[in-house]
Amino acid sequence: MLWNYHDEDIDVPASPIDLVVKGLPESAHRALLEHFRVDRHHSNAFTVWNEMGSPQSPSARQYEQLQRAGQLQLLTSPARIPLEHGVTRLQFTLPRQAVSLVRLTW
Image (cartoon, rainbow, N blue to C red; front, side, top):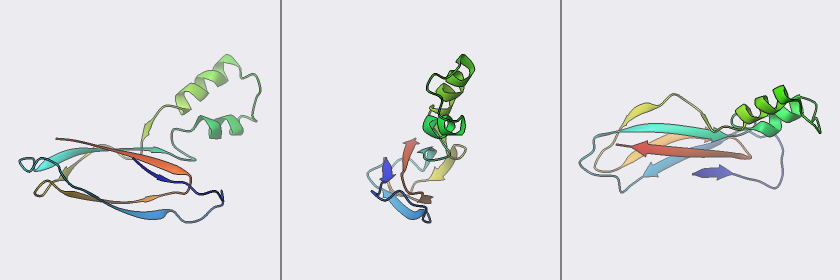
């Protein structure tokens, strides 16, 4: 899990991430990568609530929308990635006030 938190909540370019994962089984040559994200546009019921006009008592329909918006979402489709000698390297950007969960299975 990686996060990009700052006290100042201002718009700035996303931060580049160069993640090296070590200690994976040396016998594995490929892994399945799942990259989940919580940010302004993914897995965020607060954003949807604000877009609704911040209702103090959401309707049943609005509540369902908020429930769906709060579910953990994949940032990209799952992908097979290479592993070399128990190591892989991932590069992506992470917006401010965001969290990425990277899950590897082999």
